[in-house]
Image 1: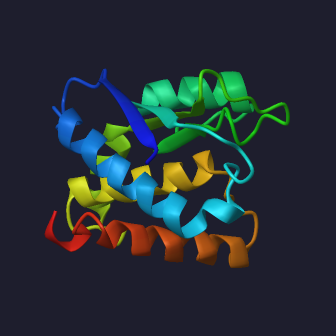
Image 2: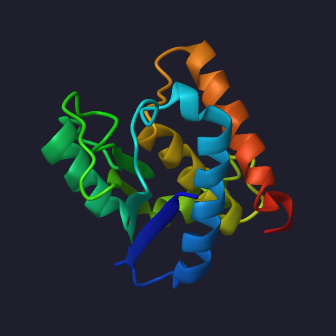
Length: 169
């Protein structure tokens, strides 16, 4: 059984997210993706005993800064994913651990999206888990450059979210 390490940090003062619960639910989501999509993911062909990832909760000023400095995009984002393992052609496993990378989520954008009712989420926690599941797909090497890829990612996210009783959150 693969051990999953999820490290969280909340630097956004206006929403005290339950980091322990998020880490546990993220592990469930990732296990689902590995079981269902492992052969198609960046993990295929690698031998490892553990997987590590980080989730940082911040504001849109921080995601704007990250977008500008690392992606040449002068705009804030609700989520930015740094897929260290998936995006590196020289992938390596260190001490039997794969570091997938980091998910950065702007909590003010999460609240804004729910308040504008532009998403399918009923509340901010649902929107947060939807974004986390989306970030996990990116960490595993899945992208959405066209409509078919987008539909695949969203379909797989919805399946994974059922594992954490998404509708009840």
